[in-house]
Image (cartoon, rainbow, N blue to C red; front, side):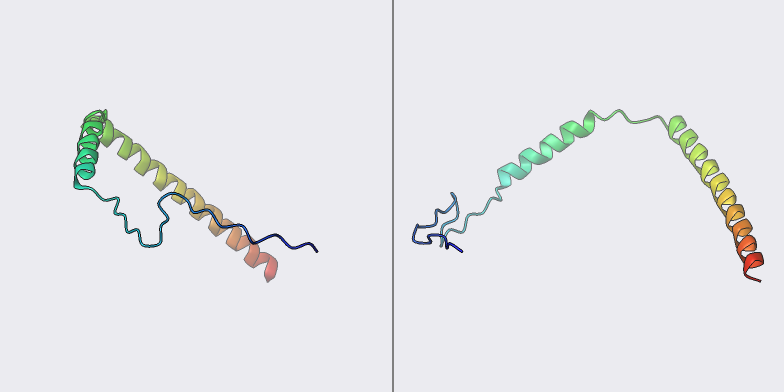
Length: 86
């Protein structure tokens, strides 16, 4: 096999100096970020309380129905397997 020539100097990417300790944390950026978060938070279209309660009731009923269905299927399949194995 042919070997690669390793005599070429390795190029370093910008900001990868040996003794560089650059901190990217700046308090002004944190304040700017927080102000942008507040501005975006105010743009959210929050659902009404009635809508939220209605959705919660629908989801709760659906979860209860599905749990009963899965429990019945599990019970039925368990009895079928038990009957086959005995």
